[in-house]
Length: 144
Image (tube, rainbow, N blue to C red; front, side, top):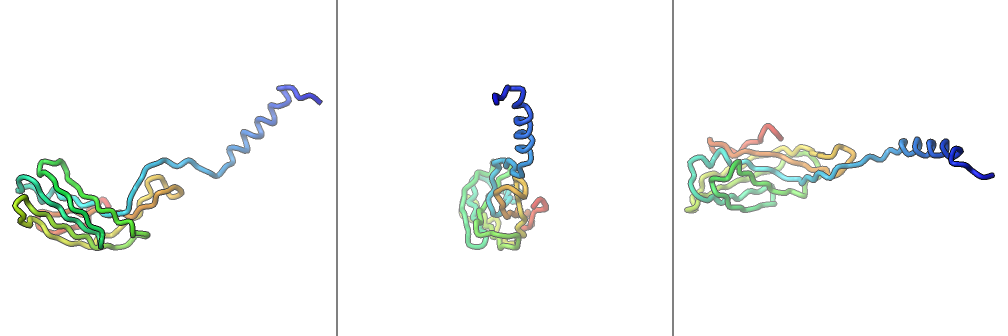
């Protein structure tokens, strides 16, 4: 029996309908890393020139230099050891260009889960934000 194009229409419709039953979903490619973001802008008001920023999350540390003219300077310290929401110790020291400490603070930061592509798609990251305040404290930011 020879099939004509007209007799293939029901078969094509069946294939299309079954393809719509797949439970797989496409995931976007937004990335995220576990770690803590440090906002340092509030303490730079009276500081001139370059600052040296040393920030740590538990045993992960970075050191960066910033010009005080940078708009909303932030430092992100990756903390790949984070595997769940919980608390971490955050430490921040800022020195001016002559080596004088202009900020030295610690805080306990609460990591929150971040799944930028949704709960069924990677990545899963655990993040917090802290702010160096003019009063000399390091505080958890409300946005985290």
